[in-house]
Amino acid sequence: MKSLRAVNLAIVLFLLVSAPSCRRGRVIEEGVLNVAIQSAPMSLDPRVATDAEGDKIGQIIFDGLLKRDRDLDLVPALAEKFERLSDTSYRFFLRHGVRFHSGAPFTAAD
Image (tube, rainbow, N blue to C red):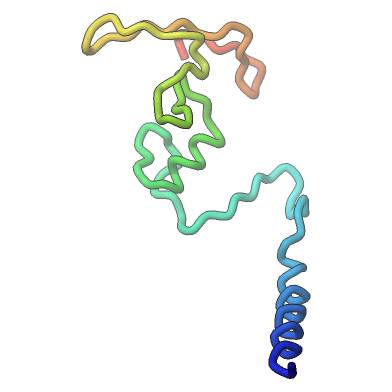
């Protein structure tokens, strides 16, 4: 009986101590996105990011022509659709109405 009471007390103390770290929606600095990761990314450039952290941050920050679905198949993202023309060539049809954060339109030149 005493050991059960001690276990319950330990659980309650643990919850009381850990509860403050579970707060959500706390703003550390206005206009800043804070992301918890295990280690620093090797690169934030999605063209050369080869580590998990760099890849995940790149997915959050950047949109690509394609993305992977739950089955890891490539599906359109900024592209409406795409066609395989040959083993080395593809044709992408871009979504209309897409704009950069600056307001500039997204075009094939980008």
